[in-house]
Image (cartoon, rainbow over all chains, first blue to last red; front, top):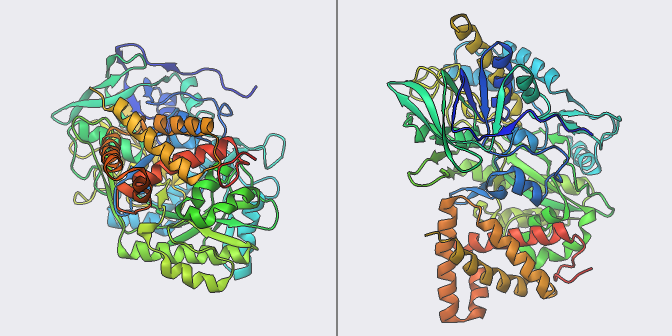
Length: 489
Length: 112
């Protein structure tokens, strides 16, 4: 039995207190909780979702969507086109449900954050050292054997074109050495048990509605408990770590709006499915190879590809593509992701529980998505695909290079299924008061004790899977907080 | 008063109509199960999305009652913003459910 001992409880007490309240238990909140608890702070972690044991739901399934994602996995940034996104809503947050791929932020990205947003003491070398510590803590490693076939095909196609590609490491352990039997080292397996061991309390199904702030000083939070009752948590410090959508929404509901929720950054993604002569589908895993030839503007990779997701990828041109679904075992879904110049907004609206999210792609983004899908189609042909099915209305079936021009001509982003899983930058950190919602260590401007420590802080999208950036910055900020506040505690 | 009951009934009729057209081989009992799943999923969306869907669903039902059921299918193939996304959402949830639960379902919806 691999399950961890229960270290959590559903929130039921209507009045609670602590020294440090941490809202959210994902890639930002969990390491913050562990470090602060180990430093001797009285830490209380509240998580809106439930604790779901790893292995109790099938990965990438509708059941998982139901149990571990906000809105059952159906959340949308409104726009032309609207962009579907997903948010983890469970103990451990997105780390429980994402692909588990790990990429350090590129040095030039960190330097850009330092310069443009005026982030104090964000030394790239120091941040990489912190990232290395995180990698040890969450067991970042390469596969102990060959990657799954869809991953190998992606690499083969890239190699045939001479395009740079590599295997992304993951936060996984492989107890029996079998690359198919990886165990995700997410927050419920790593930092949350550490936090609990050091004395932190972890309450699930506890939603923070508002932080009560007076003259810049927060004193308590109004919450909804698991039993539906209202409650209050009083604290000395609060860390908001609800992710790039919920964190700005909580701050806005609490009356904090300056540079909060106005600069949502994502990696917009378009998809295709590729059909091969032989069975290649792996329903419960994702490819680990990524193609970085055109990075940071454009990256290619593989997606979860069970039969239900293959059907989804064929949906936009179902009348022509539907026959392929009967051959789903020979198919896999791949994506082209871009670094977007567009920006979105997160707006908390009085009377509505969830914030309204919008996103606007620029003309450059649209062109990049067009060329990305075309290049990805070419790559799949080179990988040996017999047919490629781009996910947009009016798309042709691509059987050879001559079809690429037709597909590119017919493509329009407004006809495509655009989605993203990487959301960040809604409370950018730094000293530039024109751009930033928090200071260089996450203290929200104009407040004395309200901190943000999650993906919201990244000044813009890093162009790679962002979890490494989120965790390294969260650990850096937590250590700074400890150094500042521990002597006074 | 919640808009949920009316939303459920409005979406359910549309989902069944679309499924019967798109997947004529889908057994009736399965069509009903899939429609129930789709309606249930839409009922847990964010409040503003539920409100938007309720408004579109109401428009679609009014349109179908005036223009007739076949015209509803015509409407489902238009790609107007919001309206097109409503039908796409219904199809997305339904198709994902069908092929995740019964992966060998044929392209016309008939069982393998």
